[in-house]
Amino acid sequence: MIVLGIETSCDETGLAVYDSDRGLLADCLYSQVDIHADFGGVIPELASRDHIRKTLPLVKQVIGAAGIANSDIEGVAYTAGPGLIGALLVGATIGRSLAMGWNVPAIGVHHMEGHLLAPMLETDPPSFSFVALLVSGGHTQLVRVEGIGQYQLLGESLDDAAGEAFDKVGKMLGLPYPGGPHVAELARTGTAGRFEFPRPMTNRPGLDFSFSGLKTFARNTIIEHSEVEGGLDGQTRADIARAFEEAVVATLAIKCRRALEQTGLQSLITAGGVSANTRLREVLQAAMQKIDARLFYAQPKFCTDNGAMIAYAGCQRLLAGQTESLAIDAFPRWSLESLAAIS
Ligand code: KG4
Ligand code: ZN
Image (tube, rainbow, N blue to C red; front, top):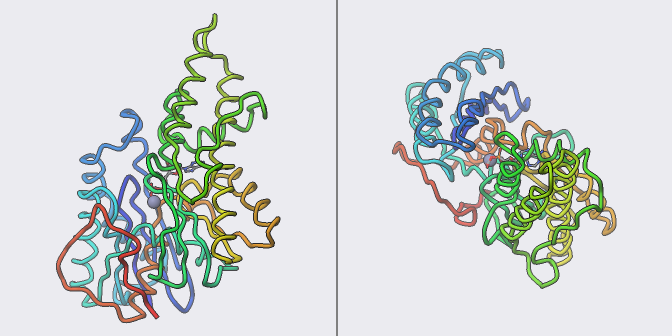
């Protein structure tokens, strides 16, 4: 089955064509980062307007790149939530309308299910069951995954998501939006061990996270070192970035290991924007080796928002015969656990 995937939940317009026989045929992405950079964060109205401008030209582009005709498309998958309501409605409206015009089924995909299944696009995909660490700009969750749509939330952030904390600390360090990749880049030149940041909620049982205290710790360290003569020097900024990254990564790894021990499962997947972080991958890999477990993740471009994960997830659900009414609907808040299981 050939499925067109449309992702417009936030500040990236992602399109892809996935074929259940041949795999991913094409994908393309337009990032709005330049539009939002001046504001230091995503402006929802600007995001919606730009998705309107970009989605249809990208649909044409990705179908051309896949080397197929419109008439070859057998289903349309679009992100139906969670995300920014206006941005979601653009993808939902275009996706449903195209499907109606082409007389094929359409399906609204859960954005986090898309992320969760992105490692399935790799050449050595994980097999069920596994634990998923979902780390994006809006979510930090540990999920027990028995199959598509069979999700049990094991733990989640009680406040900021990991990506959100990266972005806020990036802002404090004067780095461009989104801060995550820039903090990671700066951390490379940081001195290990100069600052020791706390590992929140690791010395008590449970699988929940909290990153807002860590963010405050970073703020206080920045303020303290800005008050010296000459202000915050370049090396200190890098050292703070490194200590922060190390603390987030160590905290995530401790909880992942705990989740595997608790569930008795032997595979961990990590997905979502922060899973593109090289240091996180290294530390998780080392933690998994210690307990004879395997780690899976997607290539970096499919960790952050993209159309391929939506095309893939939608294709699996359409193949399983899942159908929906023609209503155009989007869900800014939507629980992963409420999704229907497919066999
Ligand atoms: O999954 P995603 O593209 O969008 C959401 O669904 O939120 O995740 C975006 C988040 C941002 O917070 C961004 O700063 C973070 O992922 N991110 C990173 C890295 N690349 C993206 N954080 C740390 N290190 C990275 N290399
Ligand atoms: Zn995302």
